[in-house]
Length: 567
Image (tube, helix red, strand yellow):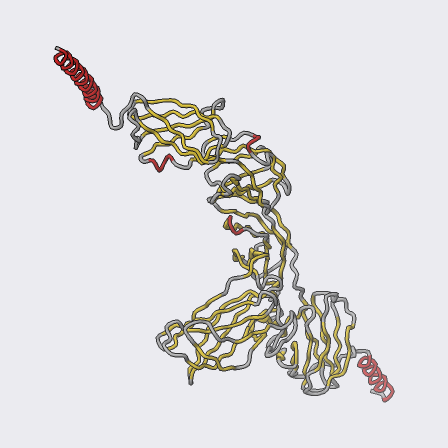
């Protein structure tokens, strides 16, 4: 080969080399760590963290290198030089950054590495497909379906949260015992400050106060993503997001001394933590050391802003892959509130959250006796329009409305007696969700005294009471075995009534008017004697005849005596 041709080949190779990309070829295994803070960095060969908005991206390269961060659109967001073995902040993600696959280019003089960085948002795109309310067995039932877009997820949970009530104090027991005595932990939430927990251990069977060293931490499952066989695999590592210092406290039989556990701000690495705090379901780990023995208590806990101090009224576990989630919750009618449905799904290793408010269209109605200032409990009420269903519980009517505002007349029956329109105030109800409506009525306390011909109280029988001029189907029917059954019967004042009394085949009808707030109505069966049958009645009349004869004889003897005296 001529010398000139050799120069031409060398020049061509040189031009080809210069035309290659500026990123050098990688040689061998490179030690690079990335993470959320210099406190906790992850070897990228084992897996890279998945980031969320407001979290920081840190890097540690065991060789000096240039770093370029590119977003999914290919734009260079940050470019800088990092020193060898020196953790360096690259970027803090924000809510405006494009979610998806980012690239972190790490370039040295002798090697290069392109690291995929995944940015996931916390919000979940979902919608309510159906929602309905029903009254069943003294409970309010909330039913419906929630749908999401066609995404892959690892399952999750649907929660119904009471937006008004504070969560009750949580008490958990340990898996191990203090000697032969169980240890308990009371967890108290600060209702005025999100993320503050007070943890108080105690042992009810403890005989003497015991000094112990205690500390606590909160951990979550953190996702790492790595490539295996040309595919991405998500693995999880349990990481601490908050931790307390050790302190000495006295363990007694009741919750007394405790320690304070403060959560960091959302998406920040807090005191004692290694990774950011994310809205999720975490684990509280409480440690108690006495001498050389360490006891552990742990429980799952819900850490979601604005929900942290609220009561969880129900939950449904959700299966992976499904995109429609049916739910049904049964709630106590007497503790109703406004609610929030919270959907938590794990997508690409991150717990994503969606929520919506739910307001049951339920109004309350009470009947108040203005004469006695007492709540009436024995009544029936029906509404002419706008009420889907209603139920009476402990004297309160819960009316399920078909709209946010309903104006309706009603029909009220108290103690079996129908009230007229002018006997209720108001006579038109304006019902709205969560309003307590009072219907005022004037009811007299009426007692009945049923006596026989000789004025003796009759201890058993049947009485029917109804209003004159109204359908007899609206009536009170009482079978009594003692006079207690005939006391304090509520009847509308100024009403005209009839009573039919039946005793051993004898009956009597009596009309009466209610014109006072307390009344006693006496009804006498003139042809009946208490405890009578045919023999008793016959003996009674014979005794009367005998008495009359005796009186006649006495008068006759007296008259004869007078005649003898005159003679």
